[in-house]
Amino acid sequence: MTEQAMDWQELTSLTRGQPFVVERVRLASNGVAIEGEFELPQLAQLNVEDQVFVTAFVRCHGSIKEMERTFGVSYPTIKSRLNRITQMLDFVETDPAPSRADIIDRLRRGEISAQEALAELDGRT
Image 1 (cartoon, rainbow, N blue to C red):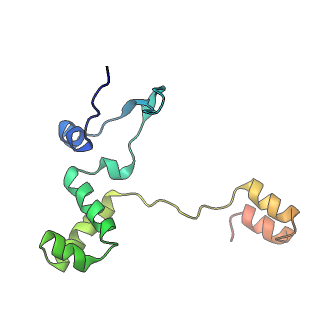
Image 2 (image 1 turned 135 degrees about the vertical axis):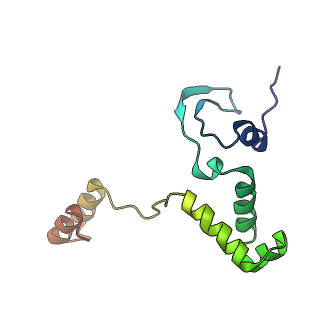
């Protein structure tokens, strides 16, 4: 018997904004289950209304004018809500510092000098 998957909005409604931890994940393709303690991604931790707002913002390609039309509100209202949501999200580093192994590999290939490698390893770049 196949279980019906719960809609994300239903899950968010059931938790009423309270933090929760996922303890079991099942891969739909093969039924393999993984148990542990998994934290939800930041966007999934937002309330339903904020998730809908962020989704609309992405679909509008970040156009605040389009958001104004979609939600029927003013520019300051959109900016205020974006600022509020931004404060709830941690910054995700998209260009992390290179690992020691990466620095050493670049040094071996002659892409950087020994001094540059030492500076990067010391975190002075």
